[in-house]
Amino acid sequence: GHDSGTISGATLSPDQGPTPQLQPAPPPPPPDGTLLLAQADLAVNRLFQSAQPSVVNVSGARMATAFSTLDVTRPAPGQGSGFLWDGRGHVVTSYSLVRGAAEVKVTLVDASSYTARVVGWDAGKDVAVLRLSMPKSKLKELRPARLPPTGTAPAAAPTEGLMVGQTVFGIGNVTGLDHTLTKGCVSGLGRELPGSSSSPTGLPLKGLIQVDAPCCHQSGGALFNAQGQVVGMVAPCLGSATSRASGCGLGYAVPIDAFRGLVDQIIAAPVSIGSSGSLGGMGTAKPSRPTLGVTLAPPQVLAALGQEGVLVLEVPPGSPGIAAGLRHTHRDIFGDVILGDVIVGLDGKSVRSSADLFNALDSRRAGDRVRLDILRDGRATSLTVVLGERGMAGMLEE
Image 1 (cartoon, helix red, strand yellow):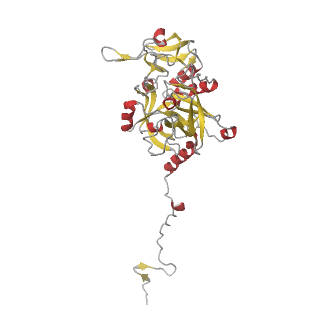
Image 2 (cartoon, one colour):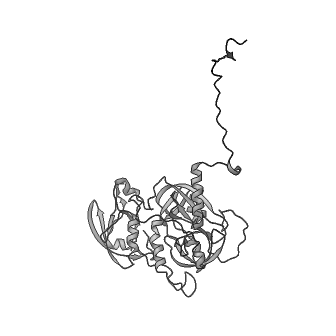
Image 3 (tube, helix red, strand yellow):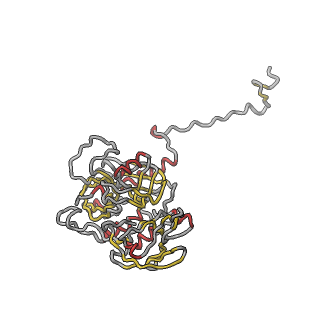
């Protein structure tokens, strides 16, 4: 008999057996054999799937090309990306892609292609606006890119609320067959790329977003924030400086607040193409966008001081700014940094950031006289400036 009431050393009472050891249930197999993704990965994929219909392929060169390679780092000549601005068929892209063309081909997410007319551009920002020629029924199917609400940029950020360290996503359609995604973070604001013989004007591109991911192969494509809103347009590879930056794992984008008002101005009053049928013809295929002709300092300079406004970095000779007496930022003979004028208002309207300044200038025209409210050496004063025209010979841009 088993009078001890034990089994394998475990004491049993008359009313209970051994305590069962509960084992965790095995995880269910992945659906359809696919790998389970982390929530963060799923969020990125959802953003990509949602945004890619708004990103298009732009072919600026009228030539037959074969798909001999799908290497996105070696796109065919004149090939690049763009993004749908609205539901009326307007596309924003890099001016470098369409320079010298009156019409280009645009390929949508479903691989359908349409002719698009170049309706305007700003070479200084390397931005061009196209208008698709397509049936109205097809226009209804377009899915424009989401834009951030206007007037949301804090004083410290010139790019609709961007900040260093923020995650951003570049999306391009390089081949016209599929889309690419680049993920990185903002590693700098207010950056500059030097001009080169391959750039549209030979002048530097200023006020750029720097991203810690090489995305220049997505030239003309859109840079999105984590909410799926466009915060910039990917800058092209222009010259050796951009190539070196790409090799170092860096990319650049033109912030949306630098061209948003410009695009709306072009759409509201498109200009005519010259009789030669090209942008370089007799017509004036660009808006008369006014400018102070000065270079603005990166916003983090004033942010570190807790100061709102826009700091003047450089005032070139012959610019409207120097004629009005604006002062630039410089180092004195002792090596100390002497801040230039801080613009805090234009015609009585508050200027807290470069976005505010661009928006105020977009409602003016070249030749207009405006009153600038500035802080100089901590004291408030005002100056009258006669606005110049963006793109005038020898004039640098904001």
